[in-house]
Amino acid sequence: MNSPHDYSEICISKDLILRHLNCSTKEEAITYLAKLFEKKGFVLPSFRDAVIQRENKLPTGLETKPYGVAIPHTDHDHVNRSAIAVATLENPITFHNMAQPSQEIPVKVIFLLGIAEAKSLPTILSRLASFFQSPKHMELLIGAESESAMAELLRNELIQEQIL
Image (cartoon, rainbow, N blue to C red; front, side):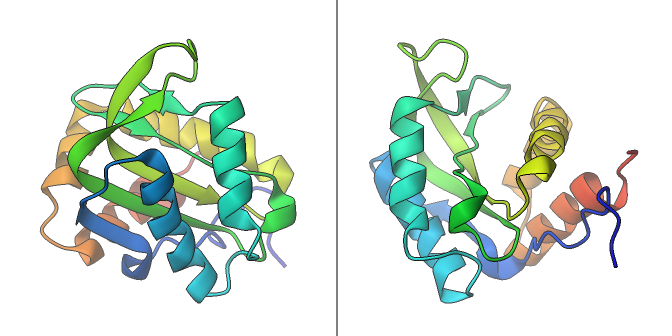
């Protein structure tokens, strides 16, 4: 059995990554990613709507360099098994700032989180924040030539290299 600090159970797969997604709204992008989760059985059908409702009340946009990011998520009640889906966007779309909800942020990368254990979420958010606060990591992610390369980078940086 895995310890509470073992995050290797979080699925980060090329099947959950969309490169150059062309969307015009955050709802559309969240829907694309949520459908990937649902097809694979990671989440309940209620997940998508719950994420959008939470995003509208508690925005997750972050101004980072060189690209704005968003980390939409919802309660673990809507999740069967933990996973992270990622979309790089063809053109930035607007999310509201986590720290200043009235401020809009152009977002280029979305990390949709489906986390089955509520107690894991703060650590996962912290590790993600460390990842995308590094311009080097973000450039490597955006510049990756395949979904497989993106998944490998994320697994290496978020899961295998963890210091918990």
